[in-house]
Amino acid sequence: MRVLLTGHDGYIGAVMSTLLIEKGHDVTGLDCFLFEGCDFGGAPPKIPEIRKDIRDVEVADLEGFDAVIHLAAISNDPLGNLNPQGTYDINHIASVHLAKLAKEAGVERFPTMLAVWRGLATSSLMALAGLLTFIVWITPDPSPRTIRLARILAVVAPILLAVHVGAWIRSTTPPGGLDLPWIRALLGSSGSGRAETTRFLCALAALIALWRRHEGTAAILTLTAVGVSGAIGHALAVDRMLSVPTRSAHLLAAALWFGGLLVLITSQKDRPEFRSQVRRISAIALASVVAIAFTGLVQSVLLLPSPAGLVTTIYGRAVLAKTAGLIILIAFGATNRRLFMPRLADGHGATALQRSCTVETWVMIAVILLAGFLSYIPIPE
Image (cartoon, rainbow, N blue to C red; front, side, top):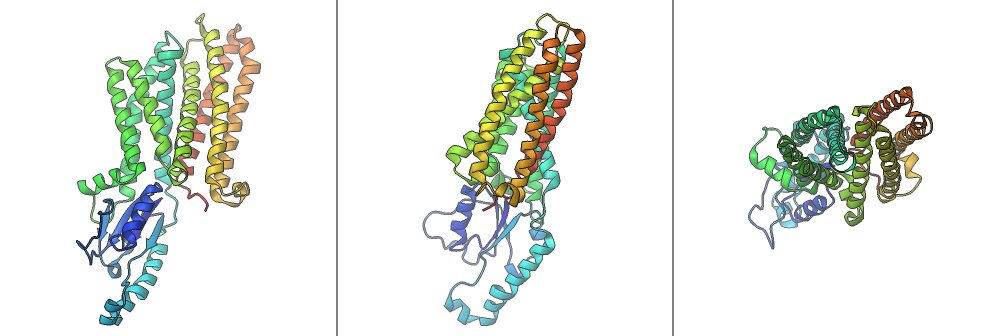
């Protein structure tokens, strides 16, 4: 979540910011820095910050955040006795005013466009990684259409990743505009920021490698980028030793399935090796389905407080919708195996298979977009 932490430079706030960052949240501080330079022990991690008195906060300061944690206050008796009215203004009136501003700013609103950009960026990256995996190691002598699609995706993926990162940075930018220190702090202060940077750089390096015809290097870079994506979002909010590898495996399995579909769609169905290629891709897709189902189940257990959360929480209902999409994809795969693969010797069977895989690909993209929305829905406590 994108969290605004008031009083982040204070006694409790300095500890709270560290805890929030460790949980994978994107934290921005707001403080008047009354005790600036009076630190005890090590300095807290550097985070983006708004230097402002809590009494001067405006609606614009709160826009783009999912939650506000309010710790700014006069917290000791000597200061309170020195100026009782000022203490009342800060601790009571400003706190109530902050709550009203947060409601007016729509702090709990859902970041729709940010979720869309995330889904599009992730889907293009997964498609590229899966496609290159098949081109390099699984399906020798790919068709010219397959190679051309890989090159297009190699250009599109880093562009969409850059757009998503830009939208993410913009959504957390305070009034006053962007500057380099702000961007550095945002991308370097949390696990999500570092992961976003890493997967963009991997995608960009993959584009250069593919342009120089180093397909193997490009495949490794894109698979790395997909794996790093497991360290973005809710996986950082629970047991990281289990949740991050599980999510990475989930994404990599889906990328293989996605890449196999794209190979089938772009292959020349009249080539002699098309039937053996279909059987090989079908076997990999089946293994991918098993891996996706298992890792998805593990993630649900980690992120949902109980099975009832599937129907009683917004996050749980979104998980059910994603599961429904997976069931539809499995139904397409079963249809392809039972109806179309036995008829591959017939030209009409190959054509029907490619048409079915095309529809299945669009369903796959829709499910990945839904997963992008899922990443911005707060997990239930």
